[in-house]
Image (tube, rainbow, N blue to C red):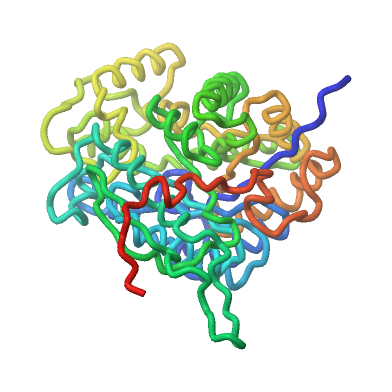
Length: 464
């Protein structure tokens, strides 16, 4: 018996603060006008995508103490945008990144529970952590969370949020006008949580939403991040859109689920992916070269080098060889506000690896950075890209992809109009939504009640 075809899940990432965005392209629009978000979300919904996704930027990046041009537009508040999108869309899921390092669980749980009601069951929370002290200066009253505690706090944060979501069972509201009875139980929303990070109690004031709780996404590639996703997430936003590396990641993360009492289908693997389409494969390859040159202009190329070398390279020729001097790993970083600090923290090793790669392939500084950071996940005609994505999913390297176009907000249009119909013809992507909630779209089981009130809540006298 042949293996049944898996259904592909598709997300659309509204790009903001990153080097995939080509804001200077004549076709690019605003990253902050609501019309841009509306166009993007409605296109994704027209193509029957599972979700649209907003990342988070909590402080403008700086280079040499000045705002880098990739951040020139800033990034509006996630909840405000998603709540507004809930009013102008009907089915597509609404996912947003909210940091567990800088926020408090009561306010975040309340915001996501509200979004789930407003959108009739389409909310998703991408739980991230941060060790970026520069961004942390905007929060935490001048102090900062030690790096080794970020996942510890994240687990406590999410557990507390679950207790708040579960403080309502879903059947408390009677609203019987004849008897004047509004609540069936006086304990609705009651909670009490005490651990090393949070000590809160009271009543959660948003009743249980259509999904019970929002879909939980997680983005992280470390061992701790993978374990966190296996224990707590509904989907993981991975970095592995290639077949071989994707299969290794897929096996590893899916293999961790059993020890948390979960099934393989309880967690979806959704790698971030970029794409460049063309009339032919050759046309797409040429377009990809142009896009890469746009993404790594002179200033961005120098900025990426300075992240690793941590020294002024403003006189460096982007089209020449890599700097011959060694990085200066100590001292105040020239680049501030980057989410990915791994390359900078291992500066000498990174520089050595880059020099070896550049020497072996005869790459200039710009070409090296394009090879390392500017690779497009899918390049080709619509038929080629549809086949590649389907191969990725059918061969258990992913359950779908979250696509980030390089042009905002219209960059997803071509994919919706050309690739999606081919996936639908292959029978691997929906032609209509079959459910109403994001949990339905992702084929996830009903949200389990993780924290029965009787198990976690401490006795609190009723005021009634």
